[in-house]
Amino acid sequence: MKRSEVLSRIIESGVVAVIRMKDTNRLLKVIEAVRQGGVKSIEITMTVPGAVEIIRHLSTAVPPDVLIGAGTVVDEGTANQVIDAGATFVVGPVLNLGVISLCRKRDVAVMPGCYTPTEILTAWNAGADIIKVFPATSLGPKYLKDLRGPFPDIRLMPTGGVTIDNVGEWITAGACAVGVGSDLLDKKAIDEERYEVLTERASRMVQNFLAAKKK
Image 1 (cartoon, helix red, strand yellow):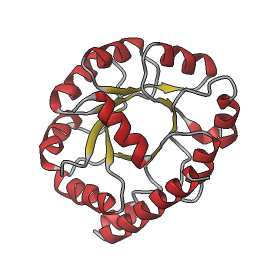
Image 2 (tube, rainbow, N blue to C red; image 1 turned 90 degrees about the horizontal axis):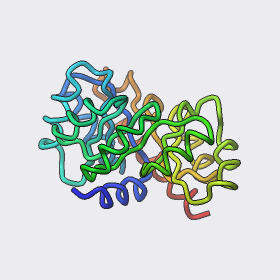
Image 3 (spheres, rainbow, N blue to C red; image 1 turned 90 degrees about the vertical axis):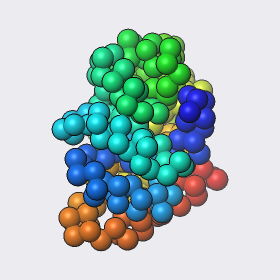
Image 4 (cartoon, rainbow, N blue to C red; image 1 turned 45 degrees about the vertical axis):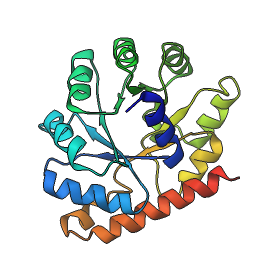
């Protein structure tokens, strides 16, 4: 899939689910549950044991409308591995110019993690598709709003501190999408295999995202 199509689909749906699970059978059920709620961009972090093989399995096991990406990618070697395994987008917790360059060469969407205005502009000028503002927990939506003044064209995706209830605030402040983990992926519901809870939470998050985009 071309980088431009992946980017378009992520921005259209607006929510990237950050998942840290190694049980692929249960993981597929989680992905299907949030997919039913409208969340179709899935980030598998490299902190999960065997993450590359999990991505390889998922890339052929999920429905075609689901995007599988890799998160916590901090070096070019790992970026190459996850792309070879089928990842359609690469997310990092930090700014690594080598990873951006590699992903552009391989036509894969790349979202480096940045915290400061200098990092954000450096990543954007290097060819990043979306800037992952991380950790956004301590920054808040007003930080994104302040960035829109000098950087009106830079696409920002806060990760950390994003919830179902405040996702609209982030979008109104200028985010093009959000990365979200624990607030969407209720651990107790997963442990009890109550996947309908995940579908309901995903649906509410997407509805709040879309409502904010219309404002």
